[in-house]
Image (cartoon, rainbow, N blue to C red; front, side):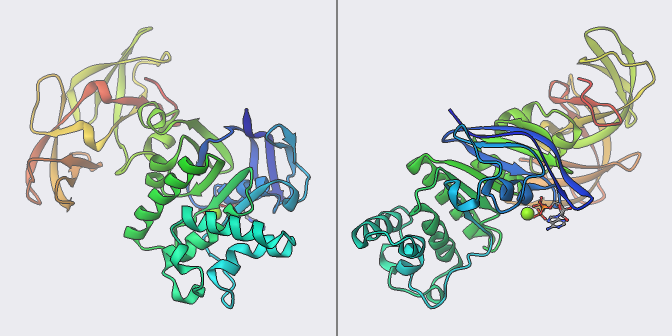
Length: 361
Ligand SMILES: Nc1ncnc2c1ncn2[C@@H]1O[C@H](COP(=O)(O)OP(=O)(O)OP(=O)(O)O)[C@@H](O)[C@H]1O
Ligand SMILES: [Mg+2]
């Protein structure tokens, strides 16, 4: 069954249109992530699902019911924000119980639900603490607990981990994934962090300037991006793009040569017809490049700039002859700064794009 369905949804703030006719389908129980650069409309879209923002056009349905103009409290959704917004004078227990208490639920029911949520979130021993006595991660867990006790049909998260330090973010990410496995509710999670999107999502919705760029499973987006924007956005560090030209294009094969490797033409499987001489961009990921010359690969001479050392791997930043910056994942070798080296780009992993960012191969 459909958990959430957005049909041709749009949003304007006065004369400013920020969401331009969006269609999204999220299955019941699915973990969906909205990802995209700052200002692309992620929070606005989430707030429209929550009913905190009026919808200008189109339709929003939750579990088959049209909720487009229904008030927020009647939609069966609970939202968790970046700022935890806990009541400082109330205990953890009272904070989590708050919505049930003002809803005048029986005491026994409140206790049962708060204890169950505390168990899931491992907050049992902190129920009498005040928020000021908790760490950032614990506070965010209380905020999530407040959502759980309401037993919503849909959980909405807007960058809930942005206030936490890097290590805690990773830990809380795992906690949220575990929470989803445990309670199986439909969840929509907003982030501008593509690593968070990749690791949490069943389905990623990539947005740019109020338009959906692509919807798919994390690996689908990584392996088969719809366009150059998605190719560059998904994957960390991002895909490298090199300038090239189409030398020939029959129905099936697009023959390309890179500006930085003019003598080494190679064929990519063509998606569309391309005029000979057209400028193209060829994308290749840092993990699909090797140091040194390799048979069957395209070899590009570069100058090493610097390395981001992570221990097991390192990310080497280089400049090509025409000044294009590239990043290469290194496992074994570690070239020195200013060293002139060759890179081997694996042809089967390459993607070609036109100058508008559309896929050519
Ligand atoms: N209340 C408002 N009035 C006018 N414009 C708004 C309002 N809220 C958001 N916007 C505009 O709508 C666009 C989308 O904003 P939104 O907050 O949804 O972006 P976002 O993708 O969540 O970005 P971020 O990653 O920075 O949180 C932006 O251009 C923003 O300036
Ligand atoms: Mg936002």
